[in-house]
Length: 121
Picture 1 (tube, one colour):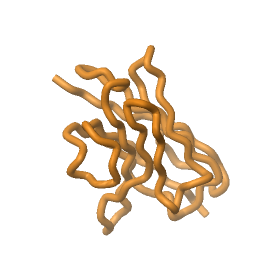
Picture 2 (cartoon, helix red, strand yellow):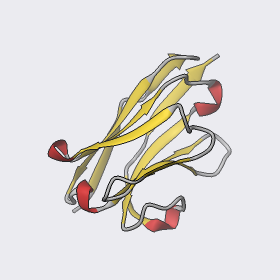
Picture 3 (cartoon, helix red, strand yellow):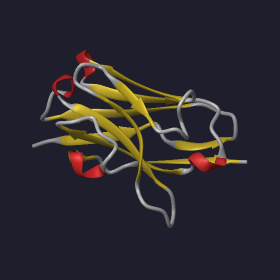
């Protein structure tokens, strides 16, 4: 059984930093693509970042230069480091596991429950 557990969200002020973690069990993250997505109230879930099995990284334009995706194979965990947060980053952040590191939700078969990030301005 595959389980993805996100953590690290919280309430921060604009300009702050956060590190989100996605701990996986039931699958080895180094052999899959992992994506981070987010969903703000009233909006569709959107792509944030992805890392392929061979560590090719991709970011949405809105977070490029501020967010960094990384992976710790020994801990079977994927991270999303976020700096210079602003109110537009407020959302529930989800990690997902799939066979291809794309920007589309349907590429990812397994999803976590999400972690809330709230940025106050």
